[in-house]
Image (tube, rainbow, N blue to C red):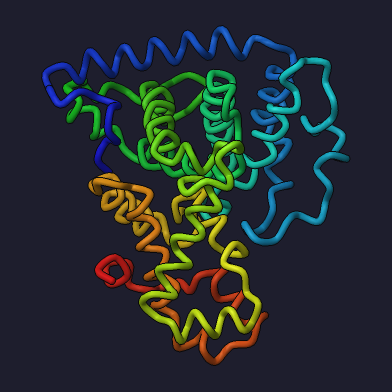
Length: 316
């Protein structure tokens, strides 16, 4: 996966120095912003694996237990002013990519989820105009997963691979991983920033505008399918809100998501590229949709069929 725009300069001779600076800056943010009893409690609970058996079985089916009533839940109301933000981050991080053993297999899963939570909490504290929005966890989860799979990318940055981290924070994950995941996630969020900005919800570049673009594309290129979905009263927001806010990261397997994001990051307009791919996804399953009633169509679009050829979808 190519680094997003503005994370590193075009001059590769500077990458080692820049990556080290990113790590130092991120660690400074962590030291400054995570020094609260709220965070220490969350860290203790996650590291102890308290939530490991309380994660939902799938992204679309919530766990029957109410996490707010769990005796160790960070969703109780601690005194810190940022407790609500922390609880929102933790709640979604616990639902991040439950299909990946990387995030659900003990004993390392708790420390990995904690890393994703740190990334999102720090970013939200530093971006008060946006803060945290549901869906951001999926982006951070993809980036952290990809970087943690191997330290080979360190050679590309001009850094020695070095040993895996021996710290308790991330066993078997290079210490540079979380800091670069923070920077890369921030770049992705910036690409999609209007979607996460509540004041822009109704604008052309906000979440409603993005949904409308996809709907218009389907109407233009497949009017029969669009008419059928309209006749079913199936609002495109029922499925497109998730597609848009997660950059399609929950609709495909991880290798396909990485392939899709490579295309997105190479595009001149990443938002428009995602819109076109989303429209192609709808039209790709037109045969099934045209023979479906409301419930069947909803199930198809909210749980996109696995095994679809991503390259064919991108080619349109």
